[in-house]
Structure formats: C-alpha cells, structure tokens
Image (cartoon, rainbow, N blue to C red; front, side, top):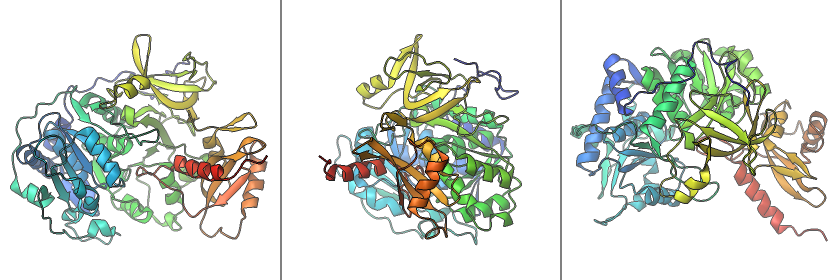
Length: 564
C-alpha cells in the first residue's frame, strides 16, 4: 500500500488524541468560553451559546422527569435543520440518552420501523411532520412503543424581522397541541425542569443513525461518544476551524456528514452556524455575504444549483475560505467553475453512516479531483479483492475496507448484519464499505462505484459514476444519472437520464447528447439511450437516488418480452 505521508497536511499529526468525555461537555466548554456569541443564526435570528446550553438542559429535564427517559434509552429526532434540531440533539445527550436521527422525509411506515427497531418511547417532531408520527403514539402502559411526542414550531425561533425568503413550513405559526402524550416545545422549555447528573462516558452509546435501507430494512448504526467525537474533532483539526469561523449549515443534520461537519464540529470549536431549513441558493448567497461565511459544506448537487444562479456575480463571496463535501464525486467542470468564482477548490471527502462521516479527506493544500482523499487520523484503509479478500496493488480496483476510531460498534439488534459487515485483518476489525475503488501511487483513494452498481455491456464493465462525471462537460447538461438497461445484443446497455440547464430544452435533442457522448468517451461506456427529465429523485440528504431509477427501469425491462 502506498504511503500517505508525502502529502499529509503540513503541521498536522498523524494520530489524534481524542477527548475522554461525552459530547455534551463540548457544549459546556464553548458556552463557558463564548456565552454571548451567536452559536446559531436562523433566518437572521441569533441564538447565543449560553441560551442554547440553558434550553438544552431544560429539554433534558423534561425527558427525564416527564418522559421517564433513562440512561441508554433511545429518543427519536425527526425535524428539518433548525435551532430545535440542534437543541434536541444535545438535550437528548444531556439526559444520558441516545439520539436516533431520522430523515424528515420518512413517511409513517418508515418511521414505524425506526421506532419499533430502536425501541424509542419518546420523540421530537416538527409540527408539519406530526401527521406522520402521531398515529404511532401508543396508549399501552407496558412494553415498548412511542408514548411521548414533543412538537416543535420552527417559527418560535424567528424573533427578528427578516427579508430573507423563509419557507412556509418554517414561518408557520404555532398550532394548538392537544392530546395524550403530546406537549408543545415552548411549554416544555417554559417549565424549566433541571436534569439529573450527566453520567455518560466516551464508550456509552451517543447516536444511532439508520442506514438508507437500500439493501433491506434500515439498520441502526451504533455510535459511541468516542466514535462521534472522532470525526467532529478530526474535521475541526483537518480544516483548521476556529471560534471565528462562520459555517453555512445547509447539509441535513440527520445525515452523518452534516451532523459531524456542520453542527458538532463547529460547536466544539465555538464557531457560528448560519442554518437554513431548506436549500435555497438565493438565501445562501445573501447569507454568505451578510454573515461573512468562511466555510460551506455542500454536496455536488447544491454546488451545481448555486453556480447556476444567474446573478451570482453580484454577491460578495470573498470571505469564503473553504468549500467541502462528499457523497458523490464533484464533476471537474463544476469544480472549475467554483474555483473561477471563489478561488476555492472543492475539498472532497468520504465516509458512511457506519463511520460517522469521514474516513478519508483530501488535504486542503493538495486536493485531487473526483478523489476520496487520504485516510484521516488513525485510519487504516485498504483495497481488497471483494471475493478473495486479498490486498490489491496500487491502481487496481477492489473493495475499500477501513479500520479506525470512527467505526460503529455494529448494527442495533442485528448481529448477523454486523458479522457480515466486518472482517479481521492483522488482528484488527475492518469495515467492508461495499464501495469499489483504488489507491494511486501517492496514497490517494478513488472510488470507482458501489460494489453492485456496475453495468456489464458486452463484457465491458461500465462504472456509472465515471460516465456521469464525463457528461457534466456537455454545456447543456445540468445533471445526469446513469443506469443500466437490458439489451438483447449487449446484455446491458447504458442509459442516461438528463436534466438540462434552463433554456436548453428545444435547443438540444436527446440524439445530440448521444452523439456528443460518443465523441467524448469510449464507445462501450457511451450512453446509447438518453432521456430528458425535469428532475432527478433525491434522498433526504440530497443524493440522487440512482437505485430508485434503476429499479424503475428494471421493472420496465421485465414487462418487455425478450426477443426470440
């Protein structure tokens, strides 16, 4: 395995000594150091560190005294990004409990699984999402089941007039909350109940995010305070985040990338968060200029949309010192436009729910495009043959496996899935990521694709992510998703679903894109079919849901008889 030392960030140690505390202590430290400093700015309304700490403690008191939450109990958290999301997260931790953050786009049946699997008896929900959780409240007095719902109203934290475009669900006034098991957030905070002692340690469970469920029912990833601490402290050190940083927090907090990099890390540093509940490129640009944002964590789809803003050159973005993210490779044509506008490289990283975000990040002084980066502090990452589990040499594709302090303990109540997720190498426990990639001669890791996301066209292996990245060079293409389609001659062929840039509909045809692609990539990987679509489906974390599109295509293929 090539050494990563040659291009390790200057001045950073290879190993990182982690605090031997629970996460809530990070809040106590920052609130003591910077009590009057805004921790969160929410559509122009500031929330100081001192007030945030006080409200989080009142939340913990309610959980313990009203909901009967005990150490180690799981508490569900279902909201959009907001001060209340962050407050609930830290309030749950202050109650010595475990946060179960869920996608606010989940519907009733999806939430039912998370509740029954986690055993959560208390939950926090935004009032616009209450219809999805209220039917799951139980009146049973024994056994498991949801018994307590705290209902938050985002507009409670809009105390300053603003001309920013506030989403309707955020601006909505508080609705009456009535019924057994229900309590309004404002009433909970007004009661000002004091919690009992803080007793959790670094090896107690902290958070349990659920995987996306693309290979079956979602599974809870058991993370301790130590594993959550690992990525938040590591990110602060890697990017040099200080107490004077201002972070635009638009990645969803329920997802590990946003949780670690846009909430927990900045809080640890004593920085300020500018929080938006829904991505809006216009509001984002205004806030960048108004609050002199220094760090923006974003996925590629956000950056693509941001750069498509027709008046972007009218905003002062000079304060921006770091644009970072992951989830999907940033097309180099888009990265070049970002660099031309802001002077900043897009710093890509790589991680999973199972690793509480990053195991790899590009060094800020020497990033590579479409690259996962180097294994971060204390991470041992290797590339193995997925069948024989033997290590592959530099440049050859295999499955990426990782060992490090950010690994989950396993999947909640699922020992079989846990056993299948890990292998032992040299006496160490490695996570099988299910991602195919390779490492170059300088130790940088690159992702080829998911282990199962491969198109076999006439025996040629086509990696959709590579084709998508190439298609972004077409001047009319805003987004593309590549899937496999059954083909009588080739077995499978390549299809691209394409979102055109505004004004391009009618100016370019699907056949034009096919011909362009044929001239810009190897014939075997060039899309033979192109379909224009208005939008691509996205998960709650903003990633394009290629599996959904692939499943829809497979269903269509199944209805079409094979030619005899």
